[in-house]
Image 1 (cartoon, rainbow, N blue to C red):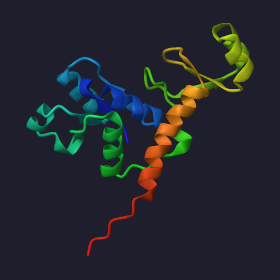
Image 2: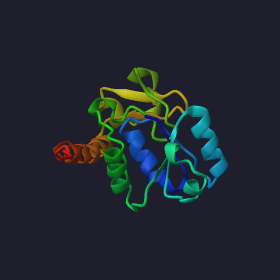
Image 3: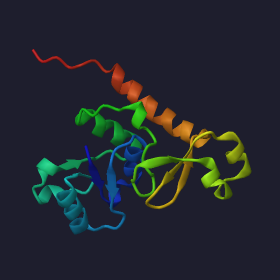
Length: 162
């Protein structure tokens, strides 16, 4: 599933990218741009902005009312019955949404802190914005945050309707 988040959903967009979901983000308050991206790229609009409801976009719009990004993420994943896949965690650039690629440390050695170069066996790069990533404590904290939500959702019993 692909998403486009508007200016009300910046932190959620980051969480979705952390989880590996293809998530466009429109930072400016620009309803027309969000609508265009949704249509051109076949993305579900995610927003707290009720103006989308007025435009009768119910089939391509998911309205959130939760304030906290983690609550928003949990509700979105639950309501849309999306499975969280640990293998997809931290596979996208948090800045520009592109898929990350593994790169040889020696190719980017001059851009790394000495400690990172010595301690990290895998370095990833975003080919779009050239940002480097590695799985240090910050990455482990992000994965732990996603795993909490995943385990909560995995423990929920399936609802049976009589």
